[in-house]
Length: 452
Image 1 (cartoon, helix red, strand yellow):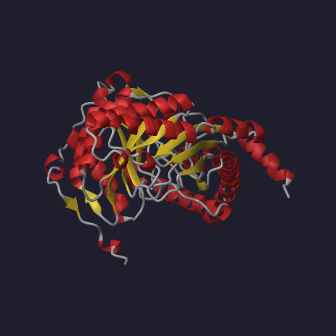
Image 2 (spheres, one colour):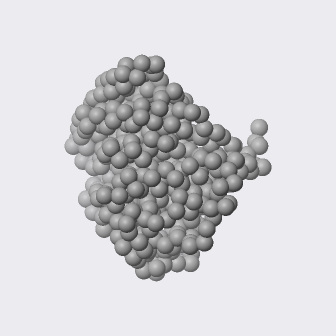
Image 3 (tube, rainbow, N blue to C red):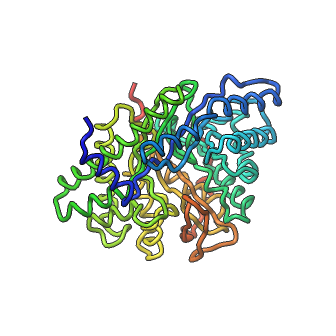
């Protein structure tokens, strides 16, 4: 039976505290589209996407209107494109990116992810061709997102791939220089990349997934911030319990949307990703949650401990609410998408080094961080290697979405628009790591990866 108080509380969270379902993402397998004929491959991919997802946006809008729950984004993820066209040239892959964009335009979805490759142990010719095509593909499309998995706890770190991605990020920055290097905001480098993640830019439809599936990403930093503020000066056990309870309620909302969408679209319900995904809107900030715990400013001493408590409590509350929790699930700290993080960077409290430390206890990694446009490819590779090593050693997902903003330097601001927000450009270390990253080969997997 529905409890009237729970209903009223959910209504209040939506109206006053920015509670929303951040995305309903349909994952679609493209394996049955594989063809040696490039024109036929492109035609089959377009037809498969537009037929399978033709009702995705209308159904999401129908659920939104019926239940009064805002659904901010409707998205698609696909089988990693490097696997669908293994013998393609870089030019072929750019054309396939155009096919994905045409499908996104036809369907009216916000983003389509899966322009991706898994190269944690080595690169096939197809994967290398796709990676080399990324700068052009992201420059000529608007809604296509790309991701590359360069490491895993089981395989170690492919430093050849890390080094290559440093150059690719740099080239993508230059190719989209007229838009504050926006292409880099659609490109993420992973360790231990999940194959059921509904969030962009890392959404991909994994090889073990069904033909089509619905995955939902919830949000709600504003709701958690309000609950922490109302809890007052309680001890940490009580604070964790407060976050767990509110995470339970947020996840229930996501599960409702996921099950309804799956039923109406006649595809399986996959997972709910219960990540706290902030936006640049006032009151929708993970940094504000941490500050409501008693920090004067996000980034000061105690921030990592506060984030660890938050991330753990969110996961515990979410798994009590749903039997199918997946994706990333926890707290995101994307600088440009979180007003509190932006303010902390401007105040000088939040640095890249502190953000790196925080990623050891949260869900993703160094996310949506703007850096000077003259940053070298080797320095970008070094930042990627540092962050990816945290994921490999700690057996967790970490990622890097670094944006070297062409033509801009420290103290200036990059504007990406919409949910991507804006970001002050942060300084990096001036000393070179070029000799280190250029060694190549693989950094071996940690000893605790031998679990068989």
